[in-house]
Amino acid sequence: MLFRGNISPLSPSLRFNLKTRTPRRNLTVSSRTSLDYPLSISDEALESRGFILRRTAEGLNLEGLNKVFVAVGFPRRDPEKIRVALEHTDSMVWVEQRKSQKAVAFARATGDGVFNAIIWDVVVDPSFQGIGLGKAVVERLIEDLVGRGISNIALYSEPRVLGFYRPLGFVSDPDGIRGMVYSRKQKTK
Ligand SMILES: CC(C)(COP(=O)(O)OP(=O)(O)OC[C@H]1O[C@@H](n2cnc3c(N)ncnc32)[C@H](O)[C@@H]1OP(=O)(O)O)[C@@H](O)C(=O)NCCC(=O)NCCS
Image 1 (cartoon, rainbow, N blue to C red):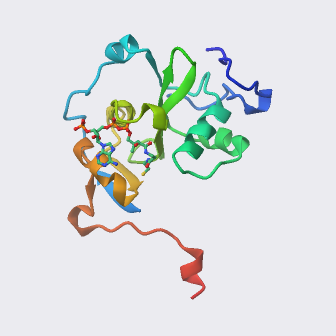
Image 2 (tube, protein in one colour; image 1 turned 90 degrees about the vertical axis):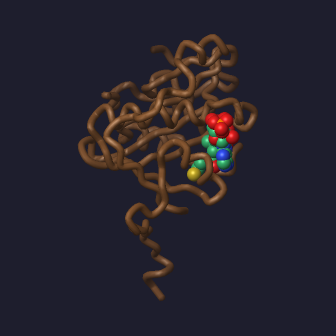
């Protein structure tokens, strides 16, 4: 797919390189083996509302994605580092608004491709929140992962977003398992 035009022209280095692997603060974990609920909205229904589902990084404007990250309060990142991160991403789903050709929702997962995956960067442009796009991208990400036999799917959730993930099948501290994050600050104490 071709790179799509956006408000600001990008240098080639900021466009996603197609030589990627595109197969294909609580830890919450899903350990299902199949998507056990129907998609809340079909691809066709999204299309009829002017949204196109994308499952590879082709055509993804990294500066535009960065703007969405910043708009939801994530720190702005080096687009080159985003490009590398996406090259090492096993699965991604994003939604393009057809009219503007902008990414308005995004989610990705990294992992070992067999047993485990972690979901990162679930974001919806604030102007498009509350209309089901966040749910649509996470559902499809899970569908893709479980479809490939990956049953251990985890993510880090800010407390205010736990209620978004729970209906999607995620639980906190399953069987008493606690998420731990390496903290350099803690280590030096
Ligand atoms: C969290 C986020 C991805 C949700 O996306 P969204 O498109 O606004 O959510 P949806 O419209 O798909 O909502 C799906 C359902 O989750 C609910 N929901 C959405 N945000 C929620 C929240 N913060 N807490 C509880 N429930 C929430 C909706 O009410 C809706 O419920 P319904 O299915 O019963 O109607 C989006 O608000 C966002 O980008 N937030 C900022 C970034 C962020 O915090 N990302 C998560 C990092 S851990």
